[in-house]
Amino acid sequence: MLTKTKKQKVIKNAAVKEGDTGSPEVQVSILTKRIEELTDHLKKHSKDKHSRRGLLQMVASRQTHLNYLQKKDTKRYSALVKKLNLKKKS
Image (cartoon, rainbow, N blue to C red):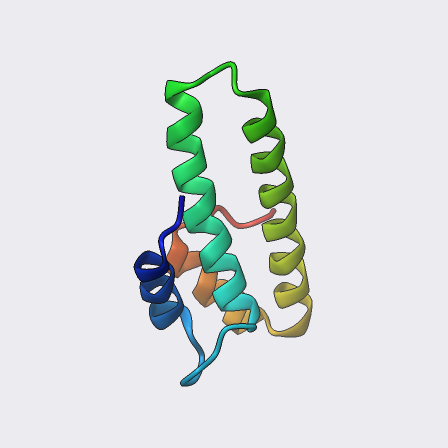
């Protein structure tokens, strides 16, 4: 689970400006952190189907945010993908 302090750290690292919580960069960063933590959980608890479904929803949501950012501003998209070490869509 993403604690409040971890979430604040992620927001601080990804924020475009002070007090930013809604930009695509912040949203994708938070989702990426949650996906990483849930992936670790599922490695230990492989039969947890409910969490797996939640993981798939988060991945789809992150992809939607990334697609939006790619359409709006490709420079910001490229910087975010590089910063979070994600694979670019080909």
